[in-house]
Image 1 (tube, rainbow, N blue to C red):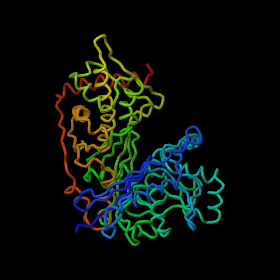
Image 2 (image 1 turned 45 degrees about the vertical axis):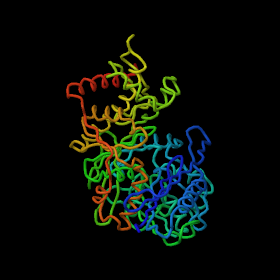
Image 3 (image 1 turned 120 degrees about the vertical axis):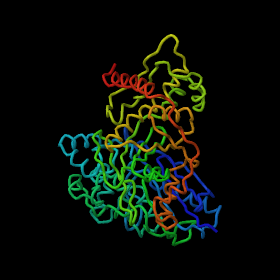
Image 4 (image 1 turned 180 degrees about the vertical axis):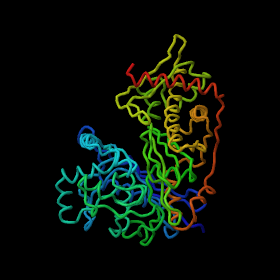
Length: 495
């Protein structure tokens, strides 16, 4: 019988546990949501014990459908910059986790930028000084949470991203580690050495003793011990951040390959090979993964704040549609947006513009404009934001992308995918299995356990469902991009 691989996909709003065999047949799956906590404006927290309950409950559910003795290895993928706090002796949680969305350290980040150190931090870590990342969250907790501060003084504090927290629980407290992809999101890891940077830690008043050991993405991190429903001794052989996991799940393992996950926003990563590229467009440089014998693969990352959320606004804000699925049929009823442009800067413009004060705009309306034109302009706006990010990535890389792999809920919209291909001028590849974040954790576990010997083997396992090729002429594409650029310029100017 084929060995089984179990993946834990611990996300921002819930946890998915998935079991597949080595031929990538899905055998069992369970999803459990958990509560979001908002104690103050701009603050976002998760109860660590509720997270663990969602994981342990998912493990029990899937193990009830299979023979647990067949599980060869476990892979973990996770929301990345969220930081957890626990007692290393007792495993007890010390406070709620501070989530990646949390903005409580905005003033501190402004202070650090004002001190002129962002350039050095970006050079070392590939990241910008922003509340998004774990570093200033940890500094805040050490200063403002007495239980965390007391544990640190006693030498009993353990901190880490979600992967580290879950590893601690899965191994009965025997392993305190993280992988390079997650460590690269903390603001503490030097991309060149793959070690914690003592100078940055000194600036943020953090002792390295509380942080986990950094290890390669693929390999044995520990073995299960005392986990309800699971036999002891199952190795955890892969840990990887969620967006990097989607890149791996898309088999984007060669330099110049990229993926876009279409969710509430759009998350784009491009594989940049064995060398970190510091972005001139203020994109993020991150570790994609590290494999024994393969070295480290790096990526450039950029995000558009609004993707599926644009369609939600048409539904809930304007009442233009009753169900999000209606958008494709309505937008397809016209052959073009007829000059209507929607710039979806509802929460500002992200990369490569970085204008938090920009606001959304619909332009080009005439008496002949209909809701179909606005619907099509909305889909075009989602795609055109991604074109801007991908063009910036190509500039940083110095070459064109080899194609864009797509996943996430909105990738099932055929019209949006065709529009994306048309405006990007590149092929799009949609896989058979679109749950690529969970699949990436399966691949990570299998690579760490020797099911696949290299990331190149992952390409053989990945299966294409549909390919989209650009249909617009160069002249048509340039004309549409020209209208978009004019509209973005107007948004930037505030009119």
